[in-house]
Length: 402
Image (cartoon, rainbow, N blue to C red):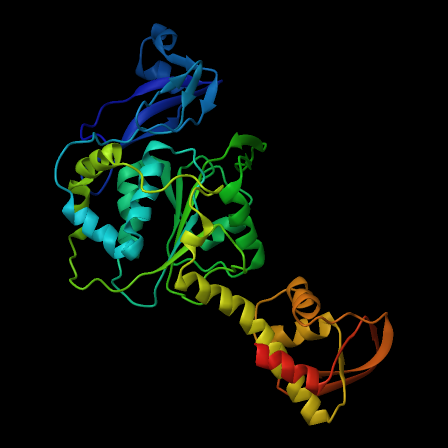
């Protein structure tokens, strides 16, 4: 960011004219932006031959590099921004103390993560998820600190932004941060997982055609929900989840103090030796990313649906005095949704077939016993479906395993 408010200059990218302006921030700094301009206004403001002096480019490209930054690559303008701090030798103990608070016993891995962002921005890295129900933990400060370093190369998304088809505002960024993340729909988690390892992606802006880009974005999520901020299944290797505790000494000027140490911190990253080597597609070996906070989310996501299924079936068997309970996947899905439990037919089918080792019967007539919205039991005769059959004895064995 610059501190002087220049009058601006003009460039032409493709057939579009832009004016380079410096928008003032409440901090007193200025951030450089490109605003679409028109030729008539340009002619009114400048002499007739001024247009011939404008820099011209064939289009935009995104080539991240913080050490040997290039504004132009061939005849294309780099929309990736340079880091506005120069590494400077010096002390950054406050920054290291803050990182120790965020990453705890995994401090060296945390420093590796930021160092890789700075030196090797094209490397794929795990999705960081910081969780805590406590307040004053520093999660938001961590996001704002990274924003201070990487400036225009980082943006903040809301949960709703991942539902939108328009993504051109963040698809070119190095980092996407999400504060108060709650992405408990399976399609949300699948999308972020796929994006975290994607090499290319289709960017789309409103009113414009989609176009393919190289994709190097990393995601950092923060959430107050420690149980289910996002759906993570067993064996997932793309998440690094950390539980963050309250900062012992509250300091309202923490962020501004951390910003003052950015040049010294970048110098440390530039000269520090990595503590890890690339051992997976997300750089870090998977077992190093397995934390208690990750296990907690996996257990909740996997266990809640299964346990509720057991309780529903057990109650129906006992109340209706059934020797065997027959039900379809849609029967169970409907009852779980009435309990506001987020799941899908595929997850239920996976539990029944892979965990409970049950096989569906061929389509047949059966009497369905289901819990309604008010807890009453509905009896629906002559329903036709592929059904699963469970006895109380089988259910006892399954519940003991849960």
